[in-house]
Image (cartoon, rainbow, N blue to C red; front, side):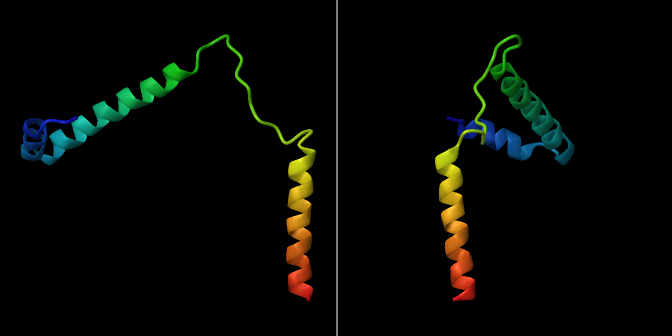
Length: 71
């Protein structure tokens, strides 16, 4: 939880100092995101290949919409 003292201090900063703080925080957040993906490891990725049930569902929805448009 962020202390009210910290928030109060941040509010008193100049506009340029606030931008500098934002840049620091965004840089740290971006670094944490890159730390989530480790080099030389494999990660599962969803692929539409062999997703027969999903394709069937989409086809049924498209056919229903087409029937409504022409019906």
